[in-house]
Length: 511
Ligand code: NOJ
Image 1 (cartoon, helix red, strand yellow):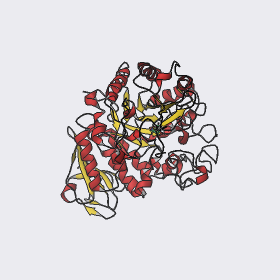
Image 2 (cartoon, helix red, strand yellow):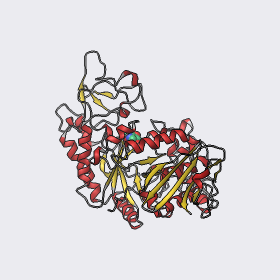
Image 3 (cartoon, rainbow, N blue to C red):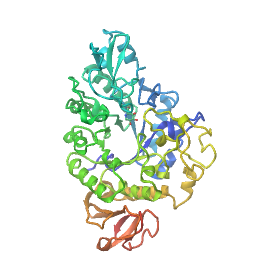
Image 4 (cartoon, rainbow, N blue to C red):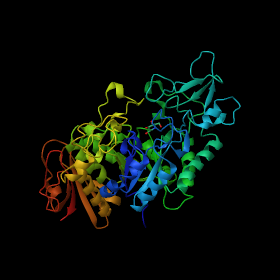
């Protein structure tokens, strides 16, 4: 039986604003991405995921969409998009795009109409509530990022509250309205017809909402409602999305952003094979660099997600400090690459992690994101030149630290750099069924070490990560193995000596 492509894949997330700029305006664009596909083919990724490039007033940098079926002029045109997809496919790289179903921009024609009167055609496409005499909002749900504010804003024209789990400029769609469901299904078809291989679905767990608007438990406040919303009506909505994808051939895939920090709840959105193909599971991303804590996470995923569906792993994205920054050293970032590319599941890389980029340091007068996420969105420096191949020295956000020495050009020219480690790991993973699709078994290992086996038929690999800054001997675990990939690049292809250096991680092949 052949497995769908997305199970064995390594997906590379591109935040278009920050990736590569073709026209020197300081904001990345689709032609910029197209110009860097050769890097991604060289690296060996299977697919790219593009964060939003749709028309948007950019209150949330594209996660506030005012036209789901067009490209914002800042990023290019639909023709540019078609060229990008064609070129990526010619290189064997699939294309996944972001889809933002929970909310539109307040500048979307649907909301402009909806807010115009109580009887507007699109009024019921959003969630409205009457004012009460005490002037209090309809319930105690709090906004994301501005947690002292309700998820409700009064619209003066009709004097009712509208719901927005994120910014007031991002009104929530009413997914109980079949017209909303039909219109959003058509958006999926628009892009499926253009040849996309799947979607990353933004805050998917938030679509179905409690019509009684029951308060969040006061003891959980000020956790934003966007991280708590979990309503059974969402499962049927997700099944509907899946059936749209199944109208098409080619194993089109959806990966849901399920931002609920509970792996069992995340697992439920796989819905026994009727729900998402993949879900982001964020508890590991929030887990400190510690072997015991990570063992717990790996066991939890095996217990909760594996029986329902296929796991996914992610350490960095456009919403969180980069793991290179969180874990503090490049040595740990290298070990983390072995960890996430060696665990059973689909791996999601975030552009720039292959160069070991740290978060940008953003001076107060350059802060632009309402959620404080500018650091991880610093532009990728591609060369050592002062414009780092952006055509301007002054892009929309400052460069990440040490861009003159830490950039794509310098990293690729140095065989000992982290990008070559990523490339060797991807090649090993692609060549080994044990690594890209095989079973997984955690091993008893010395304190501070996580070790596990992967197997598919006769193909076997053993992996070990030293989470400590001390050398450690693997003892009998090391007997009979060759070093396939090592974080320091030394001795690959030779028998493994059995000792892991500080922060070292290895992939081993049977001798
Ligand atoms: C999750 C996205 O990853 C984030 O960037 C965005 O701000 C929110 N959803 C709202 O769309």
